[in-house]
Amino acid sequence: MQVHKFYLNGLYIVLDINSGAVHIVDNLVYDILDIFNGANDDEVIASLKDKHDQAAVSEALTELKELMKAGQLFAPELTVPITFSDKPLVKSLCLHVAHDCNLRCGYCFAGTGDFGQTRGLMPKEIGEKAVDFIIENSGQRRNCELDFFGGEPLLNMDTVRHVVSYVRKRETETGKVFKLTLTTNAVLLSNHTIEYLNANNISLVLSLDGRPETHDRMRPCVNGSGSYDQAVARCKQVSESRSDQNYYLRGTFTAYNLDFAADVLSMADQGFSQLSVEPVVAKDADYALTEDHLPELYRQYELLAEEYLQRKLAGKGFDFFHFNLDLSNGPCVAKRLSGCGAGHEYFAVTPEGDLYPCHQFVGRDEYNLGNIYEGVKNKELPIKFREAHVLNKPACRECWARFYCSGGCHANADLFHNDLHQPYELGCELQKKRLECAIMIQAKLAIANQGK
Image (cartoon, rainbow, N blue to C red; front, side):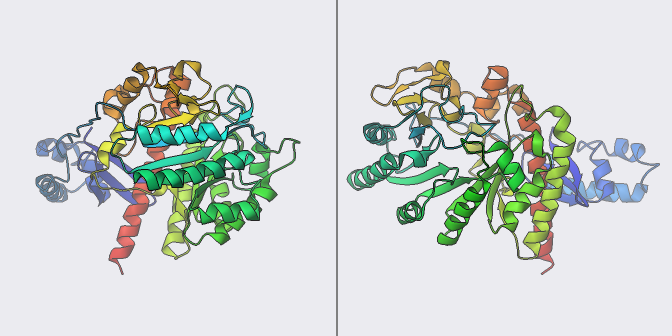
Protein backbone atom coordinates (compact mmCIF):
# COMPACT_ATOMS: atom_id res chain seq x y z
CA MET A 1 0.00 0.00 0.00
CA GLN A 2 1.50 3.31 -1.13
CA VAL A 3 -1.43 5.71 -0.72
CA HIS A 4 -4.43 6.01 1.54
CA LYS A 5 -7.44 7.91 0.26
CA PHE A 6 -10.67 8.91 1.95
CA TYR A 7 -13.56 11.36 1.66
CA LEU A 8 -14.38 13.50 4.68
CA ASN A 9 -16.21 16.78 5.27
CA GLY A 10 -16.45 17.60 1.57
CA LEU A 11 -12.84 16.79 0.73
CA TYR A 12 -11.36 14.00 -1.36
CA ILE A 13 -8.07 13.41 0.44
CA VAL A 14 -5.05 11.35 -0.63
CA LEU A 15 -2.16 10.62 1.72
CA ASP A 16 1.06 9.43 0.11
CA ILE A 17 2.15 7.13 2.89
CA ASN A 18 5.93 7.16 2.51
CA SER A 19 6.44 10.86 1.74
CA GLY A 20 3.70 12.08 4.07
CA ALA A 21 2.38 14.39 1.33
CA VAL A 22 -1.34 15.15 1.55
CA HIS A 23 -3.24 15.98 -1.65
CA ILE A 24 -6.73 17.43 -1.95
CA VAL A 25 -8.10 16.08 -5.24
CA ASP A 26 -11.33 16.01 -7.24
CA ASN A 27 -13.49 12.93 -7.75
CA LEU A 28 -11.79 12.24 -11.08
CA VAL A 29 -8.33 11.84 -9.54
CA TYR A 30 -9.91 10.01 -6.61
CA ASP A 31 -11.31 7.42 -9.04
CA ILE A 32 -8.06 7.23 -11.02
CA LEU A 33 -6.12 6.31 -7.90
CA ASP A 34 -8.26 3.20 -7.51
CA ILE A 35 -6.50 1.88 -10.62
CA PHE A 36 -3.35 3.88 -11.34
CA ASN A 37 -0.02 2.39 -10.25
CA GLY A 38 2.27 4.85 -11.99
CA ALA A 39 2.72 2.96 -15.23
CA ASN A 40 -0.68 1.74 -16.45
CA ASP A 41 -2.20 4.75 -18.24
CA ASP A 42 -4.02 2.68 -20.87
CA GLU A 43 -5.67 0.52 -18.22
CA VAL A 44 -6.84 3.61 -16.33
CA ILE A 45 -8.28 5.26 -19.46
CA ALA A 46 -10.08 2.07 -20.54
CA SER A 47 -11.51 1.42 -17.09
CA LEU A 48 -12.90 4.94 -16.71
CA LYS A 49 -14.08 5.61 -20.27
CA ASP A 50 -17.76 5.28 -19.34
CA LYS A 51 -17.45 7.47 -16.25
CA HIS A 52 -15.02 10.30 -17.11
CA ASP A 53 -13.96 12.23 -20.21
CA GLN A 54 -10.86 10.62 -21.75
CA ALA A 55 -9.04 13.92 -22.25
CA ALA A 56 -9.62 14.86 -18.63
CA VAL A 57 -8.30 11.49 -17.49
CA SER A 58 -5.16 11.91 -19.63
CA GLU A 59 -4.56 15.39 -18.24
CA ALA A 60 -4.96 14.14 -14.70
CA LEU A 61 -2.51 11.31 -15.31
CA THR A 62 0.06 13.83 -16.51
CA GLU A 63 -0.37 15.82 -13.30
CA LEU A 64 -0.07 12.69 -11.18
CA LYS A 65 3.21 11.81 -12.89
CA GLU A 66 4.51 15.26 -12.02
CA LEU A 67 3.77 14.52 -8.38
CA MET A 68 5.62 11.22 -8.76
CA LYS A 69 8.68 13.02 -10.11
CA ALA A 70 8.54 15.39 -7.15
CA GLY A 71 8.52 12.43 -4.73
CA GLN A 72 5.04 13.26 -3.49
CA LEU A 73 3.16 10.29 -4.92
CA PHE A 74 4.07 6.60 -4.79
CA ALA A 75 7.22 7.60 -2.95
CA PRO A 76 9.66 4.75 -2.31
CA GLU A 77 9.60 2.86 0.97
CA LEU A 78 10.80 5.08 3.78
CA THR A 79 13.83 3.56 5.45
CA VAL A 80 13.92 4.53 9.09
CA PRO A 81 16.62 2.91 11.23
CA ILE A 82 15.46 2.16 14.75
CA THR A 83 18.49 2.04 17.00
CA PHE A 84 18.95 1.81 20.73
CA SER A 85 21.99 2.24 22.94
CA ASP A 86 23.56 -0.95 24.28
CA LYS A 87 22.33 -0.04 27.75
CA PRO A 88 18.80 1.37 27.96
CA LEU A 89 18.77 5.00 29.05
CA VAL A 90 15.90 5.75 31.39
CA LYS A 91 14.13 9.00 30.60
CA SER A 92 10.92 8.83 32.62
CA LEU A 93 9.41 7.31 35.75
CA CYS A 94 5.80 7.04 36.84
CA LEU A 95 5.82 7.23 40.64
CA HIS A 96 2.85 5.46 42.20
CA VAL A 97 2.88 7.59 45.32
CA ALA A 98 -0.55 6.27 46.34
CA HIS A 99 -2.07 2.86 45.77
CA ASP A 100 -5.38 4.13 47.05
CA CYS A 101 -8.06 6.50 45.80
CA ASN A 102 -10.90 8.70 47.01
CA LEU A 103 -13.07 7.72 44.01
CA ARG A 104 -14.45 4.37 42.85
CA CYS A 105 -14.40 4.75 39.08
CA GLY A 106 -16.25 1.93 37.35
CA TYR A 107 -13.72 1.51 34.55
CA CYS A 108 -10.54 1.88 36.64
CA PHE A 109 -7.73 -0.32 35.28
CA ALA A 110 -6.02 0.10 38.65
CA GLY A 111 -8.72 -1.74 40.61
CA THR A 112 -9.99 1.51 42.23
CA GLY A 113 -6.44 2.40 43.16
CA ASP A 114 -4.80 -0.70 44.62
CA PHE A 115 -3.79 -2.38 41.32
CA GLY A 116 -5.02 -5.68 42.70
CA GLN A 117 -2.54 -5.44 45.55
CA THR A 118 -2.47 -3.89 49.01
CA ARG A 119 -3.61 -0.30 49.43
CA GLY A 120 -0.78 1.89 50.61
CA LEU A 121 1.27 5.06 50.21
CA MET A 122 4.82 5.45 48.95
CA PRO A 123 7.30 6.34 51.71
CA LYS A 124 9.53 9.36 51.18
CA GLU A 125 12.62 7.13 51.10
CA ILE A 126 11.26 5.16 48.12
CA GLY A 127 10.56 8.42 46.32
CA GLU A 128 14.14 9.58 46.89
CA LYS A 129 15.56 6.28 45.72
CA ALA A 130 13.44 6.45 42.57
CA VAL A 131 14.94 9.85 41.75
CA ASP A 132 18.42 8.40 42.29
CA PHE A 133 17.50 5.46 40.03
CA ILE A 134 16.58 7.64 37.07
CA ILE A 135 19.68 9.81 37.51
CA GLU A 136 21.96 6.78 37.69
CA ASN A 137 20.36 5.15 34.65
CA SER A 138 19.83 8.13 32.35
CA GLY A 139 23.43 8.37 31.13
CA GLN A 140 24.24 11.67 29.45
CA ARG A 141 20.56 12.45 28.95
CA ARG A 142 19.97 15.88 30.51
CA ASN A 143 16.17 16.02 30.48
CA CYS A 144 14.24 13.57 32.67
CA GLU A 145 10.58 13.23 33.62
CA LEU A 146 8.65 12.20 36.73
CA ASP A 147 4.88 11.71 36.90
CA PHE A 148 3.25 11.57 40.33
CA PHE A 149 0.55 8.97 39.88
CA GLY A 150 -1.89 6.72 41.72
CA GLY A 151 -4.54 5.82 42.62
CA GLU A 152 -4.83 9.40 43.71
CA PRO A 153 -1.46 11.06 44.41
CA LEU A 154 -3.03 13.91 46.38
CA LEU A 155 -3.62 11.37 49.15
CA ASN A 156 0.15 11.43 49.69
CA MET A 157 1.17 15.05 49.26
CA ASP A 158 3.80 14.71 51.99
CA THR A 159 5.79 12.38 49.78
CA VAL A 160 5.11 14.49 46.68
CA ARG A 161 6.49 17.60 48.38
CA HIS A 162 9.47 15.72 49.73
CA VAL A 163 10.33 14.24 46.32
CA VAL A 164 9.97 17.62 44.61
CA SER A 165 12.46 19.13 47.07
CA TYR A 166 14.81 16.20 46.56
CA VAL A 167 14.55 16.55 42.78
CA ARG A 168 15.53 20.23 42.96
CA LYS A 169 18.51 19.35 45.13
CA ARG A 170 19.66 16.60 42.75
CA GLU A 171 19.18 18.86 39.73
CA THR A 172 21.68 21.29 41.23
CA GLU A 173 24.12 18.48 41.99
CA THR A 174 23.91 16.68 38.63
CA GLY A 175 22.90 19.23 36.00
CA LYS A 176 19.80 17.18 35.16
CA VAL A 177 16.52 18.95 34.41
CA PHE A 178 13.28 17.29 35.52
CA LYS A 179 9.83 17.85 34.06
CA LEU A 180 7.31 17.07 36.79
CA THR A 181 3.68 16.07 36.21
CA LEU A 182 0.90 15.07 38.58
CA THR A 183 -2.16 13.11 37.44
CA THR A 184 -5.24 13.68 39.63
CA ASN A 185 -9.01 13.37 39.71
CA ALA A 186 -8.92 16.98 41.02
CA VAL A 187 -11.46 16.42 43.82
CA LEU A 188 -8.90 16.80 46.61
CA LEU A 189 -7.22 19.89 45.18
CA SER A 190 -7.23 22.78 47.66
CA ASN A 191 -6.23 26.41 47.24
CA HIS A 192 -3.02 25.69 49.11
CA THR A 193 -2.19 22.63 46.98
CA ILE A 194 -2.88 24.46 43.73
CA GLU A 195 -0.60 27.30 44.83
CA TYR A 196 2.12 24.77 45.64
CA LEU A 197 1.80 22.94 42.31
CA ASN A 198 1.85 26.22 40.40
CA ALA A 199 4.85 27.56 42.31
CA ASN A 200 6.82 24.39 41.56
CA ASN A 201 5.91 24.30 37.86
CA ILE A 202 4.26 20.89 38.11
CA SER A 203 2.17 20.06 35.04
CA LEU A 204 -1.27 18.64 35.76
CA VAL A 205 -3.38 15.98 34.10
CA LEU A 206 -6.92 16.44 35.41
CA SER A 207 -9.57 13.73 35.01
CA LEU A 208 -12.98 14.88 33.80
CA ASP A 209 -15.35 12.87 31.61
CA GLY A 210 -17.47 15.63 30.10
CA ARG A 211 -21.13 16.16 30.95
CA PRO A 212 -22.19 15.82 34.61
CA GLU A 213 -24.28 12.71 34.00
CA THR A 214 -21.49 11.02 32.04
CA HIS A 215 -18.86 11.83 34.64
CA ASP A 216 -20.90 10.86 37.69
CA ARG A 217 -22.02 7.54 36.24
CA MET A 218 -18.47 6.21 36.06
CA ARG A 219 -16.59 8.39 38.56
CA PRO A 220 -18.45 8.30 41.90
CA CYS A 221 -16.98 9.01 45.30
CA VAL A 222 -16.46 6.18 47.79
CA ASN A 223 -19.93 6.81 49.26
CA GLY A 224 -21.53 6.58 45.81
CA SER A 225 -22.21 10.29 45.37
CA GLY A 226 -21.18 12.07 42.19
CA SER A 227 -17.80 13.77 41.96
CA TYR A 228 -18.50 16.09 38.99
CA ASP A 229 -19.33 19.28 40.85
CA GLN A 230 -16.20 19.09 43.00
CA ALA A 231 -13.95 18.05 40.12
CA VAL A 232 -15.09 20.70 37.66
CA ALA A 233 -14.85 23.44 40.29
CA ARG A 234 -11.26 22.49 41.07
CA CYS A 235 -10.38 22.17 37.40
CA LYS A 236 -11.65 25.71 36.86
CA GLN A 237 -9.50 26.93 39.73
CA VAL A 238 -6.46 25.38 38.07
CA SER A 239 -7.40 26.86 34.69
CA GLU A 240 -7.86 30.35 36.14
CA SER A 241 -4.58 30.16 38.05
CA ARG A 242 -2.39 29.04 35.14
CA SER A 243 -1.81 31.44 32.33
CA ASP A 244 0.74 29.10 30.75
CA GLN A 245 -1.81 26.35 30.04
CA ASN A 246 0.49 23.89 31.81
CA TYR A 247 -2.31 21.36 32.27
CA TYR A 248 -4.89 19.41 30.31
CA LEU A 249 -8.13 17.60 30.98
CA ARG A 250 -8.26 13.90 30.22
CA GLY A 251 -11.55 12.03 29.96
CA THR A 252 -12.65 8.51 29.13
CA PHE A 253 -15.68 7.47 27.08
CA THR A 254 -17.43 4.11 27.29
CA ALA A 255 -20.32 2.24 25.75
CA TYR A 256 -22.55 4.28 28.07
CA ASN A 257 -21.72 7.53 26.24
CA LEU A 258 -21.15 6.66 22.62
CA ASP A 259 -22.10 10.29 21.89
CA PHE A 260 -18.78 11.32 23.43
CA ALA A 261 -18.39 14.32 21.10
CA ALA A 262 -20.95 16.06 23.30
CA ASP A 263 -18.75 15.39 26.33
CA VAL A 264 -15.70 16.92 24.67
CA LEU A 265 -17.71 19.98 23.65
CA SER A 266 -19.19 20.22 27.14
CA MET A 267 -15.69 20.63 28.56
CA ALA A 268 -14.78 23.13 25.85
CA ASP A 269 -17.96 25.09 26.66
CA GLN A 270 -16.88 25.19 30.30
CA GLY A 271 -13.83 27.15 29.11
CA PHE A 272 -11.24 24.37 29.12
CA SER A 273 -8.97 24.50 26.09
CA GLN A 274 -6.56 21.57 26.49
CA LEU A 275 -8.54 18.36 26.11
CA SER A 276 -8.04 14.66 25.59
CA VAL A 277 -10.82 12.06 25.69
CA GLU A 278 -9.82 8.43 25.29
CA PRO A 279 -11.81 5.28 24.52
CA VAL A 280 -12.11 2.92 27.47
CA VAL A 281 -10.17 -0.34 27.17
CA ALA A 282 -11.99 -3.22 28.79
CA LYS A 283 -13.00 -6.85 28.35
CA ASP A 284 -16.23 -8.57 29.36
CA ALA A 285 -17.85 -5.47 30.83
CA ASP A 286 -21.15 -3.74 30.07
CA TYR A 287 -19.32 -0.48 29.45
CA ALA A 288 -16.71 -2.02 27.10
CA LEU A 289 -16.46 -0.80 23.52
CA THR A 290 -16.90 -3.41 20.79
CA GLU A 291 -16.65 -3.67 17.03
CA ASP A 292 -20.41 -3.12 16.81
CA HIS A 293 -19.89 0.38 18.21
CA LEU A 294 -17.42 1.45 15.51
CA PRO A 295 -19.90 3.07 13.04
CA GLU A 296 -21.25 5.37 15.75
CA LEU A 297 -17.78 6.11 17.12
CA TYR A 298 -16.58 7.02 13.61
CA ARG A 299 -19.58 9.34 13.27
CA GLN A 300 -18.83 10.97 16.59
CA TYR A 301 -15.22 11.65 15.65
CA GLU A 302 -16.41 13.22 12.40
CA LEU A 303 -18.96 15.40 14.24
CA LEU A 304 -16.29 16.44 16.72
CA ALA A 305 -13.78 17.20 13.96
CA GLU A 306 -16.26 19.41 12.10
CA GLU A 307 -17.19 21.38 15.23
CA TYR A 308 -13.54 21.59 16.27
CA LEU A 309 -12.67 23.05 12.87
CA GLN A 310 -15.53 25.54 12.89
CA ARG A 311 -14.50 26.82 16.30
CA LYS A 312 -10.85 27.10 15.21
CA LEU A 313 -11.81 29.10 12.14
CA ALA A 314 -14.03 31.35 14.24
CA GLY A 315 -11.16 32.08 16.63
CA LYS A 316 -12.89 30.24 19.49
CA GLY A 317 -11.01 26.98 19.25
CA PHE A 318 -9.65 24.46 21.73
CA ASP A 319 -6.95 21.84 21.44
CA PHE A 320 -7.92 18.18 21.24
CA PHE A 321 -4.95 15.87 21.69
CA HIS A 322 -5.85 13.42 18.92
CA PHE A 323 -6.31 16.16 16.35
CA ASN A 324 -2.84 17.62 16.87
CA LEU A 325 -0.83 16.17 14.01
CA ASP A 326 2.54 16.76 12.37
CA LEU A 327 2.04 15.87 8.71
CA SER A 328 5.75 15.85 7.92
CA ASN A 329 7.79 12.65 7.99
CA GLY A 330 10.50 14.51 9.85
CA PRO A 331 12.94 13.50 12.57
CA CYS A 332 10.13 12.36 14.87
CA VAL A 333 9.14 9.46 12.62
CA ALA A 334 11.76 7.16 14.15
CA LYS A 335 10.37 7.94 17.58
CA ARG A 336 6.83 7.25 16.41
CA LEU A 337 7.90 3.90 14.99
CA SER A 338 9.87 2.86 18.07
CA GLY A 339 7.00 3.45 20.50
CA CYS A 340 6.52 4.84 23.98
CA GLY A 341 9.67 3.43 25.59
CA ALA A 342 7.79 1.32 28.15
CA GLY A 343 10.01 -1.31 29.72
CA HIS A 344 13.34 0.23 28.72
CA GLU A 345 13.14 4.05 28.73
CA TYR A 346 10.07 4.38 30.91
CA PHE A 347 9.17 2.53 34.12
CA ALA A 348 6.48 2.62 36.79
CA VAL A 349 7.54 2.45 40.44
CA THR A 350 5.15 0.98 43.02
CA PRO A 351 4.94 2.22 46.63
CA GLU A 352 7.21 -0.70 47.58
CA GLY A 353 9.79 0.25 44.94
CA ASP A 354 9.06 -2.48 42.39
CA LEU A 355 9.62 -1.69 38.72
CA TYR A 356 7.12 -2.38 35.94
CA PRO A 357 7.18 -1.43 32.23
CA CYS A 358 4.47 1.20 32.74
CA HIS A 359 1.57 2.05 35.04
CA GLN A 360 -0.82 -0.25 33.18
CA PHE A 361 1.39 -3.31 33.75
CA VAL A 362 1.52 -2.83 37.52
CA GLY A 363 -0.03 -5.85 39.18
CA ARG A 364 0.75 -8.20 36.28
CA ASP A 365 3.36 -10.28 38.10
CA GLU A 366 5.02 -11.64 34.98
CA TYR A 367 6.01 -8.07 34.09
CA ASN A 368 7.84 -7.28 37.33
CA LEU A 369 11.24 -6.05 36.17
CA GLY A 370 13.02 -5.67 39.49
CA ASN A 371 13.18 -2.81 41.97
CA ILE A 372 14.81 0.56 42.48
CA TYR A 373 17.42 -0.88 44.85
CA GLU A 374 18.72 -3.71 42.70
CA GLY A 375 17.72 -2.30 39.33
CA VAL A 376 16.34 -4.28 36.42
CA LYS A 377 16.79 -7.96 37.24
CA ASN A 378 14.63 -9.40 34.46
CA LYS A 379 17.06 -8.59 31.64
CA GLU A 380 14.96 -10.20 28.91
CA LEU A 381 11.90 -7.99 29.32
CA PRO A 382 13.52 -4.70 28.24
CA ILE A 383 14.79 -6.43 25.10
CA LYS A 384 11.30 -7.79 24.44
CA PHE A 385 9.82 -4.30 24.71
CA ARG A 386 12.53 -2.67 22.59
CA GLU A 387 11.86 -5.18 19.83
CA ALA A 388 8.09 -4.66 19.91
CA HIS A 389 8.17 -1.69 17.55
CA VAL A 390 6.05 -0.99 14.49
CA LEU A 391 8.43 -2.55 11.97
CA ASN A 392 8.38 -5.85 13.89
CA LYS A 393 4.58 -6.07 14.07
CA PRO A 394 3.11 -7.79 10.98
CA ALA A 395 -0.21 -5.93 11.17
CA CYS A 396 1.56 -2.58 11.53
CA ARG A 397 3.98 -3.06 8.63
CA GLU A 398 1.05 -3.04 6.19
CA CYS A 399 -0.95 -0.28 7.87
CA TRP A 400 -1.26 3.13 6.19
CA ALA A 401 -1.01 4.85 9.59
CA ARG A 402 2.31 3.29 10.59
CA PHE A 403 4.28 6.55 10.40
CA TYR A 404 1.84 8.37 12.71
CA CYS A 405 1.26 5.63 15.27
CA SER A 406 3.55 3.81 17.66
CA GLY A 407 1.88 0.47 17.08
CA GLY A 408 -0.67 0.82 19.83
CA CYS A 409 -0.41 0.34 23.56
CA HIS A 410 1.74 -2.59 24.72
CA ALA A 411 -0.46 -3.12 27.77
CA ASN A 412 -3.58 -3.37 25.60
CA ALA A 413 -1.88 -5.84 23.26
CA ASP A 414 -0.96 -7.96 26.25
CA LEU A 415 -4.45 -7.70 27.74
CA PHE A 416 -6.26 -8.83 24.60
CA HIS A 417 -3.72 -11.12 22.95
CA ASN A 418 -1.00 -11.90 25.49
CA ASP A 419 1.37 -10.81 22.72
CA LEU A 420 3.16 -7.47 22.49
CA HIS A 421 3.44 -7.89 18.72
CA GLN A 422 -0.32 -8.15 18.10
CA PRO A 423 -2.03 -4.77 18.49
CA TYR A 424 -5.44 -4.29 20.03
CA GLU A 425 -7.56 -4.08 16.88
CA LEU A 426 -10.35 -1.82 18.12
CA GLY A 427 -7.77 0.69 19.30
CA CYS A 428 -6.16 0.60 15.85
CA GLU A 429 -9.44 1.31 14.09
CA LEU A 430 -10.18 4.30 16.30
CA GLN A 431 -6.65 5.60 15.91
CA LYS A 432 -6.96 5.50 12.12
CA LYS A 433 -10.26 7.36 12.23
CA ARG A 434 -8.77 10.05 14.45
CA LEU A 435 -5.87 10.41 12.04
CA GLU A 436 -8.21 10.87 9.09
CA CYS A 437 -10.05 13.56 11.01
CA ALA A 438 -6.78 15.26 11.95
CA ILE A 439 -5.56 15.23 8.34
CA MET A 440 -8.86 16.73 7.17
CA ILE A 441 -8.61 19.47 9.79
CA GLN A 442 -5.06 20.36 8.79
CA ALA A 443 -6.10 20.44 5.13
CA LYS A 444 -9.10 22.69 5.78
CA LEU A 445 -7.00 25.05 7.92
CA ALA A 446 -4.35 25.23 5.18
CA ILE A 447 -7.01 26.06 2.59
CA ALA A 448 -8.45 28.75 4.88
CA ASN A 449 -5.02 30.29 5.41
CA GLN A 450 -4.37 30.38 1.67
CA GLY A 451 -7.54 32.37 1.23
CA LYS A 452 -6.43 35.11 3.59
